[in-house]
Amino acid sequence: MKDNFDLKLIESCRKGDRAAQKVLYDRLAPRMFSLCIRYVGDRDLAQDMLQEGFITLFTRLDSYKGEGSFEGWARKIFVTTVLMELRRKDTLKMSEDLESVRGMKTEVTSQMQNIGYKDLMRLISELPPGFRTVFNMYAIEGFSHKDIGDMLGISETTSRTQLSRARTWLQNKIKEIENV
Image 1 (cartoon, helix red, strand yellow):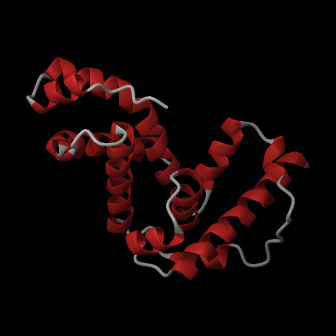
Image 2 (spheres, rainbow, N blue to C red; image 1 turned 30 degrees about the horizontal axis):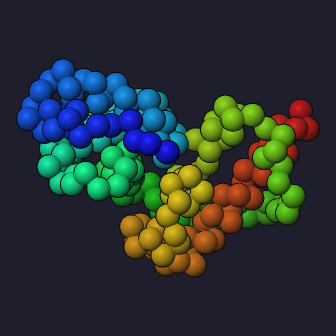
């Protein structure tokens, strides 16, 4: 997939061209807002994270060397921004999340085939914070359990457990929706 960001636009942004920065913002904001809301589950906080991410992006623009996808480079900035906020607020405490799923039954079949995108995104935003963070990092962003562990300061096993329990939580919620 071709990146929608040309080097001239990025160079203009580096030079402080406000019009170019607005163009870059307009191109990235919808996708980065979706990323933020998936992690924090709250529109107002996601909007704050979006702004923080853009501040970081524009101040670190010189570190983008034009190699690889610009959007991929930007996504890492936004993921890091959100993770720093979650750590700061201490919302990544895994022990609270582990208690909330005791007794949930796991079904091996994929129930996500019968649910729409908007419903699935809403359910992901309702995941407990620790589950939501690991689920987003693994299933959506494509990080390995080792990388997730390193970034969150948890073990690979904890990352795998959180992902498994996030899937169980989602499957149970989907089942509830289907039974209504």
